[in-house]
Amino acid sequence: MPGTKVKKQKSEGNRAAIYARVSDKSQDGEDKTSIAEQTSEMEAYCEQRGLTIVARYQEVGQGWSKKRSQFQKMLNDAKRGRFDVIVCWKSDRLSRGMYPAAALMEVIEASHIKLEAVMDSIDMKTFGLMAAIGKLELDSFRERASMGKRGAAKAGRIPVSNVPYGYRVGEDGRPEIVEEEAEVVRRIYQWCVEEGLGATVIRHRLTAEDAPLGRAGKRWWDGQIHRILTNETYKGTWWYGRARYVSTEDGVKVYDQDPENWIAVPFPPIIDAETWDRCQEMRTKRKTYSGRNTKIFYMLQHLVRCTECGMLMGCMATRKRTVKHGDKVYKYDLEVPRRYYKCYGVQHFQTGCREHTMIRAERLEELVWTEVKNVLANPALIVAGLESLGEKEEDGLSEEIRNAEKELEKVQLEEDRAIRLYVSGKITEAQLDHQRRFITERLESARRKLDDCRARESAQAGQVELAERVLQWAELMGNELDDLPQEKRREVLRLLLDEVTINRENNLTFTLAIPTDDLESIAPPASDSRCNIRPPTR
Image (cartoon, rainbow, N blue to C red; front, side, top):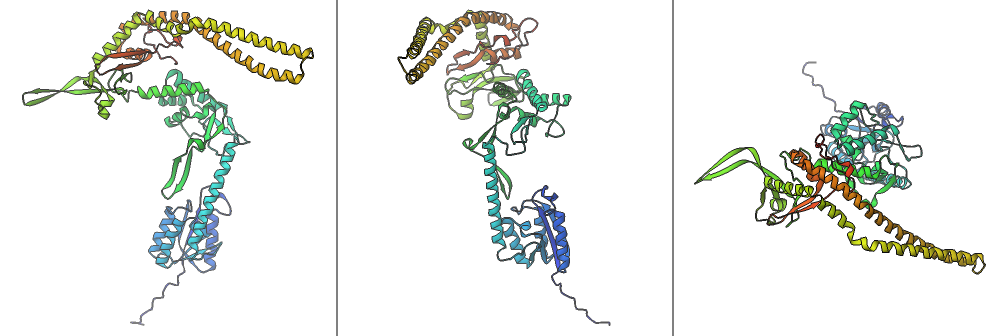
């Protein structure tokens, strides 16, 4: 009828939102806890109680965190009054910690929204307490899991599934070598150590060879090669417990652990320790002398040190020239940068150790190069230095060897005498064993002493041969030095100089590092191959 007013019915509070969650994707495949199974049971629950589903939320995330996108969206919708009740499959699907429980309780108390669960009952008064208890249970579970993993590591088993490239976890939980991948690892180290290649060039080679990737992904990349070249596992030991991973509201945080708490797990080595050490040394040199770190050429980079403060003389250059005429200052651009060496102590710490803080690079480099040429032009100086290494002990060495031989012979006679006494029945077997224990200790000591003396004698015998080889090498080097370009001169200086120190008065002191251990590894600068000088293994 016209003018009749229809009274609007109030909502009876039957609008429902359903929320489903699993902790990780692997749980979503389980029949009892999958999102699909949770949703199905919640829909049946709502139909049975006459609830109308007006919103659905589902996600993969950890229950202890309140920073879940769908969880936060549900809270925002609740504030806007979109529904009257939140239905979950089980109360721990909503929260397994105090923080999400507190955020949820704040919203439902302000909006007068109900909470219901399919598998258990939710008491609003104890919901926060139950969430806190769930958090304690979760922490306890993590602690037990951590203890179990540490126990496995101490027993030599791998407590994780992610092992370095080149290995796999065997059926007994112990590491095994994947030979096809291990061969790739050996080639990577060989290229780095013997050819001095970096990660980018190695990556290109592996890609061209179609080297097996394992679990690494679809392609090789520089970061992966870097990890292989810095992983100590390849020389025989993997460390468990180097870091601790803690889940927080801001994500997972990583905390380094005390090395005393690390657990060493033996791995079958793919390379030897010497190769690994040489690789680290080579990588350090590449980083130090990288072109990215030095835009302008310096012959003595990382070689000159200030005597006063002990710090390096850093490289610096200027492209401007300032000239003052009267009250006016004029600045000019230089076509060639003006290069200097400046003490790091003065530059960064104001040590005041030098009166003249900067030294022109050309002047210092020419002085050092001239001195090195003089040494190589007089190789007898090098030979004299080598011979002096053993002169101090040469006189007494022969006498030491004779005394050691006499001592060894004397102890051997005592052992023979004890055996004869036992055979003749003059001493018992127990007495023989007692004497032989002391005799054996003296025998081992005498043999060690004699072996040491003979080793020193052998080293002295080889000193003459070494001196002759150094003499020939120095002559070859010296004859070609004037023709070397600047870059190759720097290589020679890095090869021959251990350090150059300069004092307050700019007086230089040189420390030579003649590579006596491996002269054959150096290609002398002959007329057709003088650019092939490479540093030896020291």
